[in-house]
Image (tube, rainbow, N blue to C red):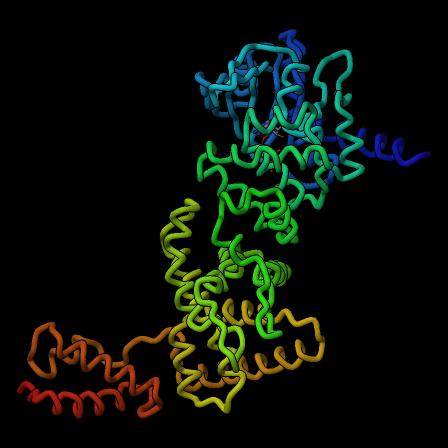
Length: 481
Ligand code: ATP
Ligand code: MG
């Protein structure tokens, strides 16, 4: 059997299995008894063939999607949500989310972003899809249940791992510029290539991205970041000209400058490698964002020194200050996720310093205190930040970080400062000296914390209480009777 036949046989089994699930069996039956034509379409079919798991299914109906959805929901005994304005309806079974929509024909006018939408056939509906691999449909009709309707050789493109628009790409991207982001996102997510004329059309139409909302761009960026090798997506964003429009701070990291024979590394390439390294080790979106942003202030802090060469002093500090502006611009959440990214950017050089010197316990305690529960993520980021091509150098740095980890563990076991809680509370200070809340309480509490971090006293109630007494005396406080 040739490759194609094998694929079709495997696919046939998969499709038959899918169609025998209770929900789809019910949908097929309903469609056939109502005498309308309907198809499973789009991403679900693509992912089925790629053997990726997906749990939302789109059903396109030549006729009213809402009517079919309501009948199916009734038979299955589940809720249905109807969105009259969009002509869609959604229902949720235990395994999947199923969306019904009437087949439509779309035409765009140059002067408006909103297409004219009319009822149409399956063919019209497939014509408005963004990529050949997203236009595949599986028939639910009596005459040919389970057969594949593939007008643009989407199967061939899935096999060849290609992203291609079914229509003239200049029109596709100009009609809805979000599709440019989607093309790059799918390439990154599925490890596909974008065919030349489709990619060239993205380069020509990149400027149109300005009409797309930040939220939708951000969704695609997050999907690129979550792909197995996110650098692939960012390289395409850069090459297409989109990156400097949607994320100029990242685009600025690109380039190498040379002076007196000294050059610095390309910080864009470095950043992408750090991001890939983190992606190999962690599925956390926010740790990946921290990797992407860890050196974001290098262009802003770059200086040339005759003896030291290129320096980026303070880039961790300036970088952490830049994060809120970037998050706001990219419509990322301005909450504890953002503060986590800021913290990792701010601290990303600290373990390096600790790995280089004879390190004091107090420096280790301070890092534990500052990083808190994010210390493991920080150490992971530091490992990922080693991008030397020399294996020996990499191994040396990794070994140094291993030593820092051992130290961190020892000190944490001894002093427990990772989740520092003041051993003597403000209430105790106030009660002991018969004072109310105020500056003195803060001063004493802070002095106790500093003394613990510096190793002057142990992180214990007794030592902290004695220390409090000495500090209070300095402030001229007398114990209450
Ligand atoms: P994912 O669910 O991973 O984001 P998907 O391909 O399923 O991928 P959806 O946004 O769920 O993407 O859209 C479902 C289908 O709708 C797509 O497969 C595609 O056929 C079509 N589609 C979605 N967005 C567009 C668009 N901007 N232009 C044209 N067709 C689109
Ligand atoms: Mg989908």
